[in-house]
Image 1 (cartoon, rainbow, N blue to C red):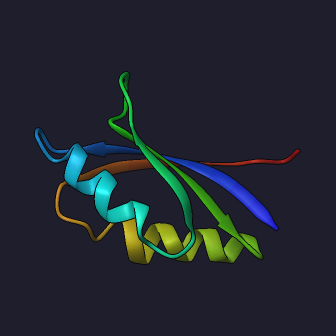
Image 2 (cartoon, rainbow, N blue to C red):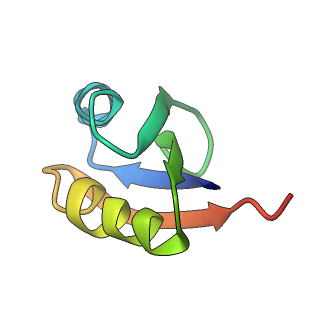
Length: 76
């Protein structure tokens, strides 16, 4: 099992919608609207690192309002 966190920058006024959409997506354990440099943080989970990559590239990035993303893979 591989876990990671993805930080997402969203367009103004879209963070709630992006977060709600991601909460129901496969490969995402949880999603939160946050404050700071990014607007949304999601917990990713998968069997292999490639599963995390697939979730980010096919589920998160195509969403309307999603800008930059940063993914941090848990090593411990």
